[in-house]
Image (tube, rainbow, N blue to C red; front, side, top):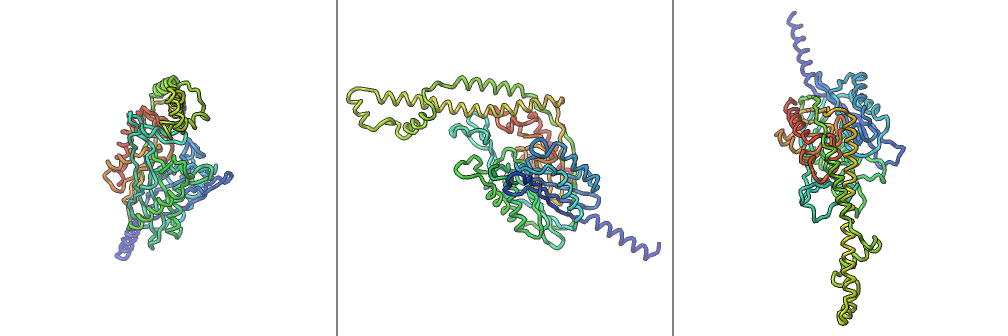
Amino acid sequence: MNLHAAILCTLALATASLHAAELRAGTAKIDITDRTVPVNDACFAKALVLKSGETTAVLITVDAVAIGEIGRIGSGFLAVVRGQLEKEAGIAPESVIINASHCHGIIRADTAQLVVQAVKEAAKNLVPVKVGTGCGSETRISENRRLLMKDGSEVDMRRAYSMPRDEDVASVGPIDPQIGLLKLNRADGTPMAVVYNFACHPIMNPPSKGNSADYPGFASKVIEEALGGGAMAFFVQGCGGDINPIRYKEVTRPADAEPLGTMLGASVLSATRKIETRDAPALNVSRDLISLPRAADYEKRISTIEAEQKKQLAALKPTNINFKAFLPLLIQHRMDPEMPSHHSQSYLHDQALGRKGISQLDADNLALVENYLGNIQIMEKLTRLNTNLALLKRHLAETQAAGKNTLDVEVCGWRVGDFKLVTFPGELTVQIGLNIKKAAKDANAYVAGYTNGYIYYTPTMQQRNNTGYAQEDCDTLVAPEWQKIFETKAHQVLQDLK
């Protein structure tokens, strides 16, 4: 080889090396809204394809309730999407992660094909990008839906049943206000995409308003309109299993997701503008399967609830009044406990004559009111017990049909630059995410539930053993020991993302 040829060869190798280190990205989105029903705002599937050398990473976000089990997306959705992408685009299955926002919008039956279409489109339009990582905060739109009671039990807030008495509540659980951010700009500095990770149930848009992507849809709209230039916002649901929209149980004004999404979108934009981007960041993906112990205490918990039901039914007291009579009596006794039935002269007249007629009527009516109030409280307890009992019975049947005492789930790792993400297919409660992020000791490490499958709620060990019964500890397939197994694995995945 002469000197000229050697120089050309060296330049070619250097160019190839530079190209291999260059990160390229492409985005696409597609409307997946079922428009055979009333629509308030559109649901989308979005694809972000990243490539550096031989490594490809694909993030897909869908405005849907879950990846399998519940909602329109069937249990085979993940395999279908991965299979088609491998066959038609040469993308390895382990490179693909799909996160559901957990909104309750109704999506099209052919969403799998639409998702594949979006990913293929994104993969065709790869351009060099610069990447930055950061975080924001949003405290105004979420609250923990679990209430810690004075008797040591926990009760959750759901529209399926009423709140407990205020005087029985001791405290509430935490929220995670952190917004994990990944910013991608094109080489010329124009925005391409923002990935934002946040933990909260998207359940503030009522069905009466029509199909909706809920607050994540409104947040993404705010971000995309502000950034312009075709920039795309990707909402990645975090550990929102026990996190509700703020004022979820409010009855004094209509439920509305748009203000919540607007606030979240504004917070994302504010934090994103402070993030600087750089060239040639790391790109890494990983995929592992772990076995979690299935719940083995369904029969015991069912028996406990059924015993409590009998106890509550036995506590119901006879009463001479119905609701029509109860309500005015209650108002009378609350407005004027001393003289609820009549004006003062009637009491003074009885007193002058040595009679107890009206005073005895007050006492009798007060006993009836208190009995009726007690019965209402029992009814409220029974409603909570009945709802959660049905969940336990359903999952007992599913576990028996499964024929095995373990549950295999997928845990994925995803790194772009300094941004690190570990994923899980369950509805992780917020403390799980807080624990993992604290253990990671990495300001840019985040956790996403609702990803690559769906195994219902995955509460902490303490929540799982709750004696009060809440959705997270009844609508679950896992035994309490699952928490340590996953948190250990998540820590390992984040450490290995180099």
